[in-house]
Image (tube, helix red, strand yellow):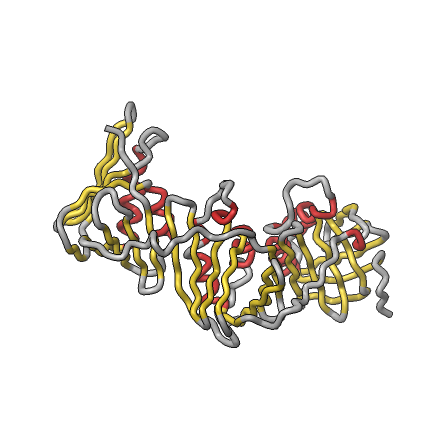
Length: 377
């Protein structure tokens, strides 16, 4: 007979499903903290399913695993890193997990592990149900594409907190996501389904979006989005819920940064351009980070030079070119970053002067603005 006592639990779980869930949770769990329970995942076995929680107090992730046999209802709070290492190290199809007074026993066919856990009641409580109705619904495929095309352009360490997240802007059913680190800007457009009334905007932390992106494997899954005070909630089907605090403050004005016109435009093979930039970047260093890009009707020549190292020159043809010749320099990492997320065989580059921002366009819904750099003389 099942029991609801938190000090006992017994389940038999598909090992692969548990590995996947713990991998997701690891993206949320804090790597360092003075609060031990924040290094843990909480497991709750009820009604033939296993629910797993992880939080860093800003982000809270809840996952449901259906590939489980629940022999005894109960809860567990186990260090996430150690449990993940154990489950990954086993090669069994299924694993048995039992709890006895906060001690977890993990058993495979020829191995067993005892892991000391904590009282599940110490795990931070939170009501995951939003007080607000669904603001809009979007397909997982569309949301994943929009996240992938912006999150890479956020700042990794910046005192301007708005740079550490992505702006989500909605006007009716039209969406825009925007990210910048002050030297480049990525903007992608998309559409959502109803109800989507009115206009709204918020800044979502980079970490939360990186976790969310890994939950969007099924492109046809419906994602319901709602906001409640200073939090945003993403519900992915019946399998996952991610709740994140929002970044306070205003996103920097960006519409004026977007170039309104250009007098040079070229299209290039995406893979060839990415490979050429990577080769030219081999001879750059801290003092000379940029690569010079010389555009003309014959194509593109990418060159670099670093003192006491040498120089490089790589040429590739343009698929099309419009306008006069132009020389401009960019940080090669900023160019390869955008080409890495491109899902088209060709990209367009638009420019207007060697000291003006360049623009990379992928399809009709993505714009990437990159500031030029000065090369040492």
